[in-house]
Length: 554
Image 1 (cartoon, helix red, strand yellow):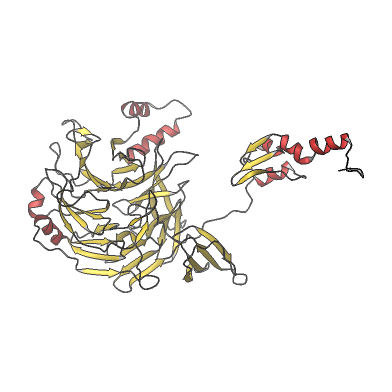
Image 2 (tube, one colour):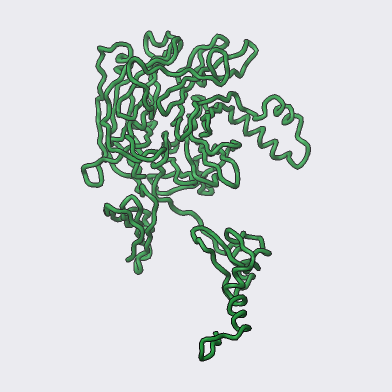
């Protein structure tokens, strides 16, 4: 710094070293938080300190910084990318069924923010890109062509529900895509969906404080919203103006509280009764007369009511009050417990006369199933039957810690004679619905599964926890989604076998083979290392590390 032999420094050199050094000058300049924004060219000339996560002290622009380089890098490249394959299935965070067969015998599911249609015979995938954030729930239309998917919200906009066609256009080789879209303002996410048995009405549940339940005529809602979107630049049409005066959200039939809670998920799912109930202003309604919502220590019944004989649409509620539900009574059979899945048994004999009379079956977290009466006295638990083992403890979706997975999936086959249940113990059970109906009527009646299948675990000892299930409409095949983010199928020829593999934790490690470039490896926080063939789009090998993987290399 220009000291003399005695260690003294001239005053002018001292002042220069203290006040005019580069670090001192930079420290006195303006500060900003966050990275540069694309398109904001004036920001690129900023030469001060930039603070961004996870850097605590911030960084400075290089000494030869050229703002034009930032403007160039903000532009999209000429070359683009097309999604060709998605490995895995979203089985970690789903609270209800999210895996279905469609009418063309394809598997329909989602991963992250992408809807996937998987032609398992041709080993080809088709994609729906209508969401801009993670998908949280899915529902299949009764005609097996359309699905509805709901997502989480983000800074760009509110969460939406998309109704889209899973049919593959043979000319273009793409799915037909979006049919309708419904926005949900001021809520974090849409967490549960269900179509009525005729497909005209759609229930959507959001995870706000009240777990709000929305019942839509979804076609009317989408049509009015589309008309409104097309007229925003000019004056709204008389049709739209009149519709908005009557109902601020067109097509919305009922809004109600699914249950007040401070944590997600309080409501796990929703299911319509396909067999109907009687209403004094209508004949027997087999399409959309009632539904149940279920989740943390509750089942709630929502029934169709009409204000008077002139009310053609009706509303869902209790005792003539819209937006209220009938709370299911667990006691004295069992204490209130978490309900993880539901299914409806067809009414038989005396039950058919009791105001509709369908029997409700629910799966619990501890592995048992509950049988419920749905007659004039409301929703009452009649019987508890041991079904599945408790299975291993898995990470809880809320509050941290671990919990039992329970009976996470159940469905009645199209013939109405068989109920299929799947649980956290990796077992799939087939029950006779007639026997379960008899067990509901009489405590002395015995009901046991007549067929049991078990998924084979990676170590041949621990079967994977099942999180989702669907039965094929025209065969005995059953498709299953697991907590390990794999998809399995059970058929009469091959038995239980995996259709697709995935990771059950964040993928932190990735490496491409230096010679066989179509081969790559991935490792995840779940402690799995997997080797893939990108040409065949199949798993080559896998190994359990027993520790989280954060990097890998060939």
